[in-house]
Length: 172
Image 1 (cartoon, rainbow, N blue to C red):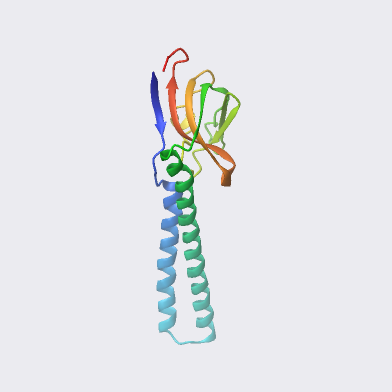
Image 2: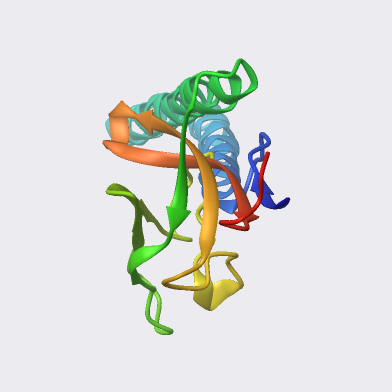
């Protein structure tokens, strides 16, 4: 019998929304500044300010485009791949569990049958990344789990897309 603890779905979290909102606020500010500069006299100083605002606007739009493109790429390579059944499965006991410290800002790691998993709450990765200290479902060594995962090449890691707590004696 499997007790499903986690299954990936597309989500937009603070790791993806905050930079996007910040870029939009910067764009709004820069457009307003550019309009104000244009309405004043066109002295050399005003042209420099207009150039700086225009450069900032282009840079902000570029960053926004990169964030959106990377999220679409991640969605295609993780969520869609999982929905299409393109994942690997490992089942066994959690070994070498290293929890993230309570102070945070570290990765949590463990292995099952030699397959390494490494994740953190501080990433914008589509997949499981909830550490034990923040209520994660992986509690420590000896836990018997069935994990479906996808190797995500850009980050060189195994992304967990499904976790089920299983009984080692269950017959399927």
